[in-house]
Length: 377
Image (cartoon, rainbow, N blue to C red):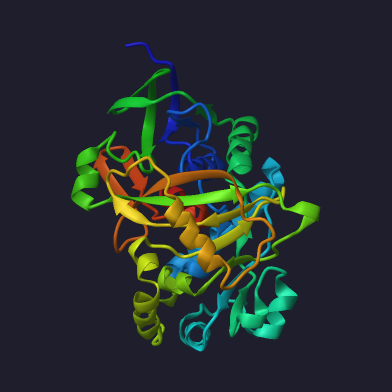
């Protein structure tokens, strides 16, 4: 058997999880090769809001992991030459009950080093030109959130890893079989001492028995992006409304959340059915990203549904005004999720580690998780 190359560490998948691991292992002086089945990034790591969202993470290890990831994004933005916006976020409350959940978060759940603050409706207008302050009870400002554009950032990280860290990144190199130390790819057989499998939603291609046993599923998101907003209009902080409080674990222990959920189940049943909570972000060229929906299962239909986009629009106008919301591009993304866990880490055979199912938190947690994994070797 001829060998195309050798490395200390092989990584299957060049999404954000795989690239974060490549950064962490190459930093430790190891020879790294990354295999990806596509010619360029096209998966979940570019089909998202571009949000690094520590605000959504529970206090403790997840919060600290998110802050480490945040620091990595800022560092890599400078080194690899892509835009990272330190624009923070606003959780906007339309009702007093939503505001009470935000107040409880600050009083009972916020990490000790959380630097956000509760704002009244007058202060909201000073923070964001989009917030409909006249009809809002208030909101929560957080300075911790970042915005990046995966379409820009991932290729830049690929290039930087190759040029500055000597990492071999092989696109169009689907992995068909693993027989350690041999990794059989569309670009030949490589020998590696350690292999990390980060295939995202393509979770059934390698070691499918691990994923079936773990109960991993896929989540389909539907979202869209506008053309650049006219006259240089800027959103400011990324925005979300009250439905988001039902989605993120950071709010799960707030005493008033149950009452809020009950109310939304009565008034927004269709939103609950489709897992809709509305987020708004803006990239460096002025495009606004809006969404999204959450449907769970191993297999999803390939279609976009206008009704779901309309629900997002209808809810958006209750808390924000964006000059242009007409879609320029529409898409769906799919990510792997494991209920009740932040990720799956498994060793199906000696020398192989599966790292997957970050549950939509890849942009927020990958770099911190990768440092933990690489640091533990």
